[in-house]
Amino acid sequence: MPAFRVLVADDERFMAEMLQEIFEEEGMLVEAALDGKQALEKFHSSSFDLVLLDLRMPEISGMDVLREIKQTDPDIPVVVITAYGSVDNAVEALKVGAYDFVTKPFKIEELKNIVHRALELERLRRERDYLLDEIREGFCFEGVIGESPRMREIMQVAQRVAKTDATVLIYGESGTGKELLARSIHFQSDRRDCPFVVVNCGAITETLLESELFGHEKGAFTGAHARKLGKFELADGGSIFLDEVGEMSPAMQVKLLRVLQDRTFERVGGTTPITVNVRVIAATNRDLKKMVKEGTFREDLYYRLNVIPLELPPLRERKEDLPTLCDFLIAKHCRRLHKKIQGISPQAMRVLKRYSWPGNIRELDNVIERAIILSQDEILGVEDLQIFEAPLREKWKTLQEVEREYIERVTEYTNGDLEKAAVILGLPLDELQKKLASFP
Ligand SMILES: Nc1ncnc2c1ncn2[C@@H]1O[C@H](COP(=O)(O)OP(=O)(O)OP(=O)(O)O)[C@@H](O)[C@H]1O
Ligand SMILES: [Mg+2]
Image 1 (cartoon, rainbow, N blue to C red):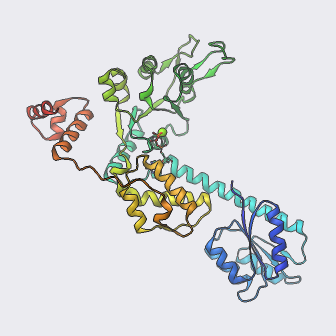
Image 2 (cartoon, protein in one colour):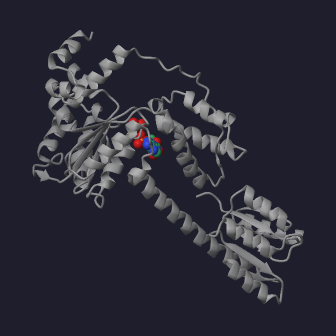
Image 3 (cartoon, rainbow, N blue to C red):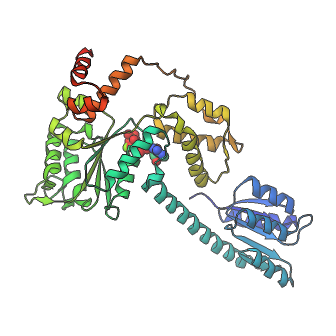
């Protein structure tokens, strides 16, 4: 967690400096203001976790400063410092929304205690907001941003299948949001109170993957000191997310097929069959259909997984989503980094729209985060973006290419059933067959 940021406002310079020193020693980032006007300027141009405010200041009084602060941010704790004998002022400050007060002369320890208590409350509040955001962002469909027609379609299908136990296979390039979508599906399903377990099938060796998925018994291999439950068992009642499923070795593909067929397996080194109730969501950035043709992916496993295929489009094919995605990402990082950014300049948005985004939304996420850190301004400009790649010109496709791609998508959707495909395409069957035969 970043250091707390504190604004000290006191017109007595020595007092302001002393308070600054005291709280900097406590590890906080402290800024001092010497009158009400300065205090408000600083408050509006940056973001603070707590304000220490002397009520008696020239020009704008502390009470007016307090009112304005509370109007802008009703949650921020403000501790006021009042002169000896002005209890009325203190009471009024509390009414306006001050967290607490000390009366001059005060004991440093007393003030420190109040500040720490207020910051603890502030920390809890931040943590609560963060968790609420996590829940909203990560686990609901609202967290999957996208208004483009293709994203809407995906979200509609996802919402419908979430309620079922059907196996879902998510296709998409790296960073297009496969894991996010998988999570959304899980948390929209009746399994949401049970675990969502992630396994990256591409990241580990075959032997490790087997024990990772199915667990192992004590003594199953050197180093197996105790029984370990596998991810399928841990996900019982919930969902398992098999990421990079295209990377599995042929031997593991056979083992996975068996679990998909009857939800039964044995732990490595064990003989008792274990049955689980798990919903499977898989993802890949490979062309599994092609792998089947090439013989590197089992056809039977492909059909078991490809029950509900969802294809996440790369960002370069849904650039109309950029403004909403940017707003969402800016808000996300500003909260974390304690910055105030209003938006993106039109020129910068044009640069974002011209760029080809090979790393998709993950790359956009990084670009925005870096821009927010670098930016000196409330509007992100071209110079903050640091995108150096020469803009990639969209390659224009011929009508024939588009037709072919579309026909292939439809036949894939019907699992190769040409009669169904012909109905969807509005073509007589023999014409579809002719077209297919004409493709090189
Ligand atoms: N539609 C979206 N709306 C909001 N954020 C998104 C969206 N899609 C992806 N993200 C964010 O982008 C980042 C990458 O998403 P995610 O990890 O789900 O991608 P992935 O397809 O699994 O990538 P990889 O193939 O590299 O594992 C995450 O921080 C995620 O929250
Ligand atoms: Mg992923």
